[in-house]
Amino acid sequence: MTEPEPTTTPKLEDTFFGFNDYSERLNGRAAMIGFILALLIEFLTGQGLLAWLGFN
Image 1 (cartoon, rainbow, N blue to C red):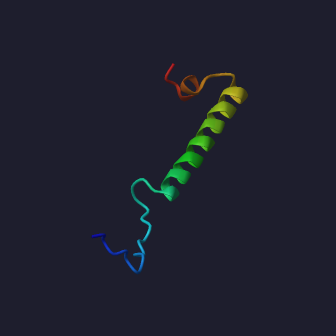
Image 2: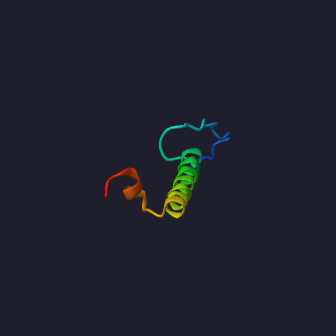
Image 3: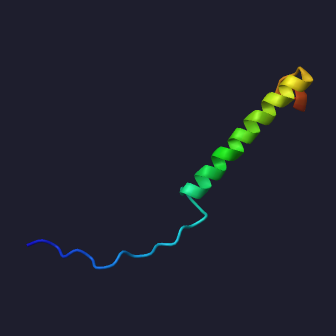
């Protein structure tokens, strides 16, 4: 005997917390912007990011 298939699909609301498409996309974009800014700082100042921040 087989299980009957559901007649409707439940509507699940997307959350803004945890691993979901929105948060992963936002995190990826923030990482790309941070990487580009680190490269620009190194190119414009001639120092690495840590030296520019005073850690070296």
